[in-house]
Amino acid sequence: MNESIKYLALCLDPVHVGTGGYSLGRVDMSIVREPATGIPKIPGTSLAGVIRAYAELAKSEDASLPDIIELFGTAEGDQGRQGMLRFYDAEIALFPVSSSLGTVWVSTIDRIRRWLHDFLTEEEGLPLPDSLQDENKVLVLNGLDSAMPVQLGWLLLEAEPVHETSTKVQLPGGLGFVRRLVLVSDKLFHHSVNDHLEVRTSVSIDDKTGAARKRALFTYEAIPRGTVIGFEIAVDPRRASGTTNDAAFDLLKKAFASLRLLGIGGMGTRGFGRMEVLDNSEGLRPEQASTEVSND
Image 1 (cartoon, rainbow, N blue to C red):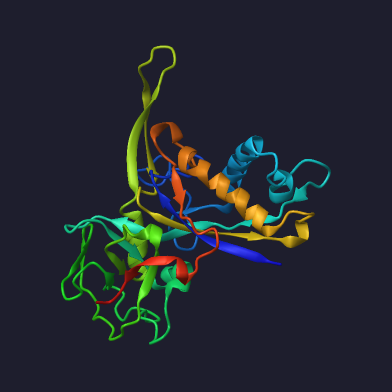
Image 2: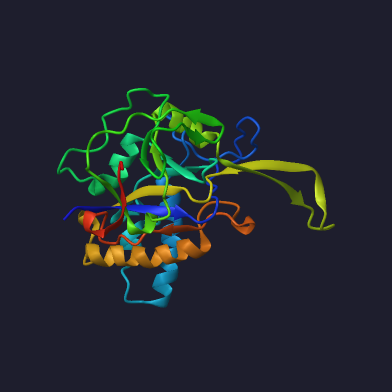
């Protein structure tokens, strides 16, 4: 049976999945972005590669786990072999922006519906409109006074009127730290994300002298700590030869434990890359939610 699970992951450190040295403006080493929107993402190939490596670590400790090649495939042989698992690009679901009242997490209507759809109750109608009435305003979902302007970094934006509904948006229990949540237009989301990426400056070290190399100063950007990433993994049962879907997702869960310790992407020796996948091995379902976000 075809099955897919959506996961949410918290960036415990800044995450840098680079473009291979491509320079973007003032940044020497930029990160991968969606071509159409210009918003950073983590390619599915990057996820598949690092999770496969961590799955191999888990397999080396427990031989009863599913076969790695059957799950992830291989390029060896005349034509190679496709695996059961399908990894899709990870995108930013909730992005942290500083304000005078503390951190505010920013998202869009489409992203909330895509990654938290199962947490939208429909008893009295969804609290989210199809679009914002004014793309230069924000819609407050939690933690802020909707009658007051909302500060997002260097922006001070007026809030849209609260919708008259008691329907609530529920977040997974692992997102209890998201105490301030607002929705913005796609245009403002692009600016909010790209203007608040973490940018660091480093210098290469000469192995012989132990000192900085001349003309070796460089800058690099990263998705900041506190960002919530959404990604999806699907199982193609046609590639299975005895491995069940439950066994495949159980191995993924063990691989996620290493993702929290060893991370993903570059700059790992500089404290980058760790991500914690929320405990939703049964999929994102309303009964797992514990933190309520309402319009009150």
